[in-house]
Length: 364
Ligand SMILES: Cc1ncc(COP(=O)(O)O)c(C=O)c1O
Image 1: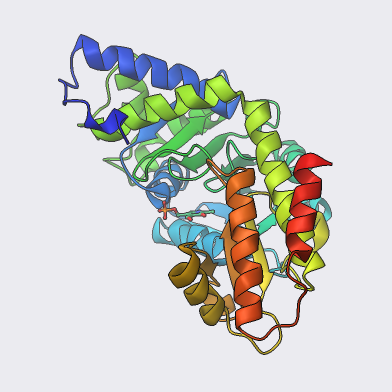
Image 2: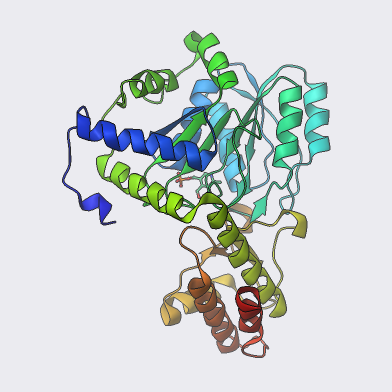
């Protein structure tokens, strides 16, 4: 926030070149790629639209497994650009499986790209087999695109090692920067396809070829959101100081503390265990208590904001954000507030049951 207060600069001058150079280098570190990564002055959805607009030309067949609200949005974005979506049936408590993807790509021969939401923020499901799914996608000659908006920086995603051709994240999630920037990486295979289909794309502002050309001159094609670039520069420097591995371990530990505490309190989580997220914890409503009552009480009495369900899960769950600058202090305060709220709403628990689990995870 303080970084954003810096007076503005000329975005076509040496001062910006230095900021942009640092940002691009540190984005390479965050994405674990030697390929290109660009910031875009848009929220995460703009990043997904950029990826789709560059990859999907009218009539192209695109695989999109829908297992939550955000993958449904990806599907709608592909359709908006004239793509023909090939679906895979997935229960929302689960992630698409390697076998399902292999089967569909084997049957439908000419799927240009396969798009996955690595962390379905609406359900708390992470695709734990993403690396193996990527191998299958590439073996079938399809491009591998990942919406990693609510997970990059908070869990494993080595973009080059996992052969991700196009990866999108948002500034406001695990990178712990204010909202308003999307970050997008493109592999060599990605560039080959985009260049080949250059004339068939429907894109102008979000043209990745223009971004690549401008980046070679340490510029952006259009006016960048300078305060957010200053913030991203700082957020990425903080990430480097902490170290990506340490940040991922921190998210993992905080998530374990949440899951252990929630289960000890007799509550259940929405995703099946093998695919549960370390960055968003989706908790089913306790019997007879509405999530709205829990969320209102936590906000009003404890100043702690937790999300509700989305789409068809609205009214069925509450979701705890476990990302960014999350630490023992926030986990402890949240679990304490949840315990107090559950008691207040008449749910039978022994106070301290969840906190004991949190204490164990951090200090055993
Ligand atoms: C997985 C996923 N995709 C896309 C989005 C959309 O991002 P934004 O709201 O920044 O446009 C979100 C936002 O939470 C998300 O979690």
